[in-house]
Length: 184
Image (cartoon, rainbow, N blue to C red; front, side):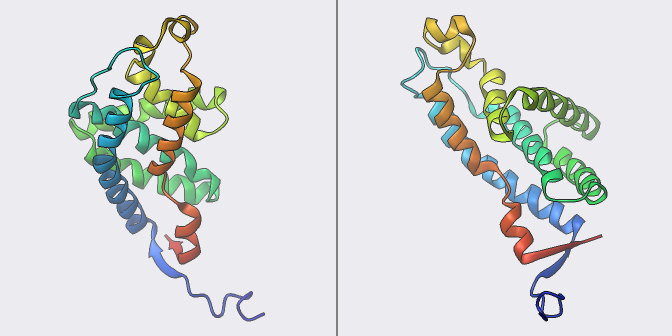
């Protein structure tokens, strides 16, 4: 009963700004280290007819997709007011990690939010929308066999593997919120 009332709460209090900084720093590190795996998966995939030849410069689009995908998940874990505050803090910090000036980076993040929102209307979930964004942004359809190229749809085996990889780039709010209480 005491735990129910919150008297023995073991959650560490952390500000939303510190949470935003931690999330962006951690995500960016995972993006930088994980893009090599995404690049290798796409460039050397047996389900593609040709190699798309993604280079290290292509991380830029991937970073935008991952950042925005994580932004889209915030409303699932917070009330409207807290979600909006955290979203605004995150987008400002994310803009610092995106190449280009801060205003351009903010504009790109907002554009990608709109783009991902459009994809989310057609997708089952955010992971699928993010995988679709990767498929689109890297023009992977151009490298598929003719059957899938004509349909303008990803090879289902390739797409499932890509969705599985995308799950590694999602912030684990469930675990974080078990251990932390976000304050304003």
